[in-house]
Amino acid sequence: MRSTYDRPPEDLTARARIRDAALAEFAERGFKGATMKAVADAAGVSVGLVQHHFGSKDGLREACDQHVRDAILGAAGQIQEEADVDPEFLRGMYEASELSVRYLARALVEGSPVAAALFDEGAEVAERFFTATWPDDFPPGEAKVRERAVVMAAMHLGTIVLHEHLSRRLGIDVLGRPNSSLIGIALADVYAHMGEWFDAEQGSRIRQAVTDLHMKEHPDA
Image (cartoon, rainbow, N blue to C red):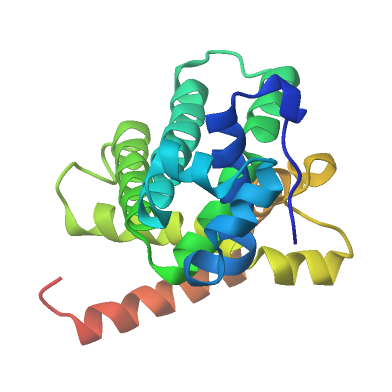
């Protein structure tokens, strides 16, 4: 699914325009499938200008990696720092990061360095969340904190990796601007209701059965 620029081309510098074109090309075709010429054509510049700014396709990917890391981690950091997160703030965050999220979806599948770094940093943020929110249940340094945090990171990033299946099933582009909040609200609703379900009788029995199985297979855990 091809993404459009977040801003009109005339509002961007040539370097930023090239980078955004590369984000879209890499997201759609992958690193191997994307070409310098396709990036140049999409940005409305010459291949020579792309080479002038970035040197090579590897250099272009490095610039994209850095931009995506800054965009996504920066947005996550702002949410953590904001006492009141209003809808307009979230709308701006979603719109600014659409290209980055599409790029990350492909990078997670291809196994790029930026994907690994963002996954690890996301898991570390989750670890801090667990230990700060439930310190008695999740003391810092315990193995189960790391286990829960990495599963949580995989759950969230999995919705990005599988965005084409989500879009096909729902009949919309879930990463497109009009629908970009859908995954977030769905996750929040799922967490809220599954929490209630696991606290009730049937959910509690299943959780206990899984716990008992784990303890039987890992008696020293």
